Image (cartoon, rainbow, N blue to C red; front, side, top):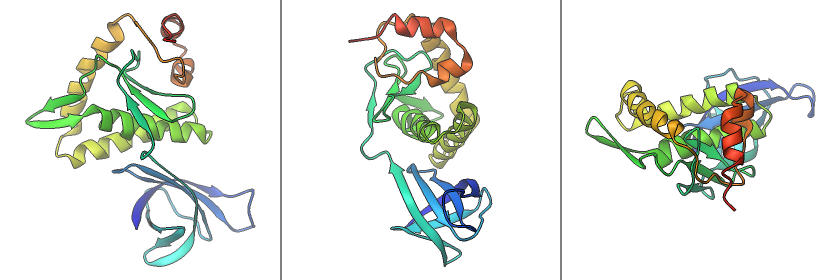
Length: 206
């Protein structure tokens, strides 16, 4: 059984009257679940998912209709990524820039950036984007997932951000040598970062 926090809820227009479509995130693993429920559930509430059965406070309220997790997702550190992290168009690969440290040493603790940035930010951001959520919202939720994961390691969010930001600036300032040809450009298109887009397109690795 896994516990999911509700991040989105709405009446489901494609199903029977009175049913609700709910999206939940297991922030630590991470996992993503879509639920059809007989009752509405507010954002921030927690649901327990056991197989397809969905329970709240021990009572079954619906069923899981789709689940996603990072088990089959590959983390690649073989490319230059202008925004440090990214993902392939099909979501099978998440990217971390090859110059970004894989392990960050923060106040006596080690944080694996492939986990914190790759699997706990880029991956859920891609899940949400693929489900039609706009980039700013997907990025906001993904940042919350990353934060909860980092804090579960005993590292403060401020100390983590200070270390990440230092390396982000270094990565962004570098001229791209080889970008993955399958990189999803949605974040760059939303930000209208024409300079970065041009650099990415000129550095695609075959």
